[in-house]
Image (cartoon, rainbow, N blue to C red; front, side, top):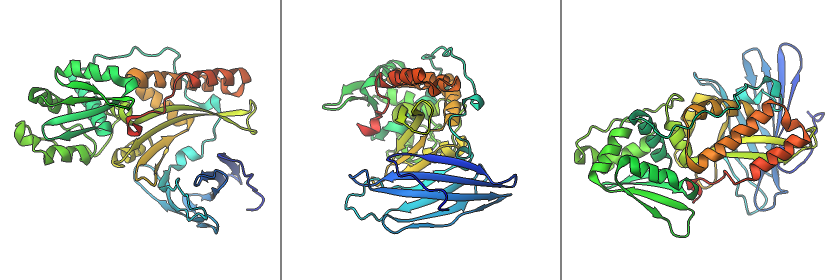
Length: 377
């Protein structure tokens, strides 16, 4: 495949689709991973995927200097995806960006960026923000929030909030009617703590049966909440729905909406626009459940053990906007979402292909950062 010579450009992601004929589709992807402190040391991954009818062919690619990458195929009933693992053995002593078990759904890979005419349109009018959730809605939101950045100790609940989201902490305190909020010293964060038995009983009644993963459920079992509060603690759902507030609460804790403007010689306006949605979490189960629901984006694990769901696809952005327009988030995170939403509308109108539009998008993206989550505090 020497005819497809890859130009070595720092932090550049190149995708090209070539139709061989009506029966075969050749997909060429080029991804460069930054390794270590020297950003010029990169792992180049070129995956050649040949589609013929219902068969997918793949083979290992060997890079002597920077390790071996194996590509293999797995099948799932709820959408197929490619899964490969990387174990980069770099010459440098400083290898910080090693990632394992990166899951990439081919459904999104086969859709080229920049075709704004085919993107779903959304209304310019932002739906009315709903801050008065009923008990069912609040229960799912709290369950997602706690699974994102909360934990149960013996007869007490802690939930972390970034400083920009502190107004939400006070809103929850008011709604529960119990608990206290503390500023965390030397951190841009606050903590809501509820030790009151009546307050904890209210919270348990709201969230019971709404967790999607085992981790927080096991904390409740470990600390005997069932006996102490005379309640049957229901097991986790082990599934995720986009028809309730759980993902909104989880995103409130661990989610980031990021608008990236990257210089590009292949784009008419000299820049490419990426709408990145990411969730970082030590527990991979909620991220896998989200991936199974969306069937778009990817999941990776960092050398620290932390997992990350990430998507930069416009198609994924459209799905997320449809969700968050109905199940809203709050405070500073909501502002980040509105910026994300506004830029998506500009992309559907083709303004990201114009110099004037690029300047406007830069202005929107520079007004505050959406990259802070309580995982990083």
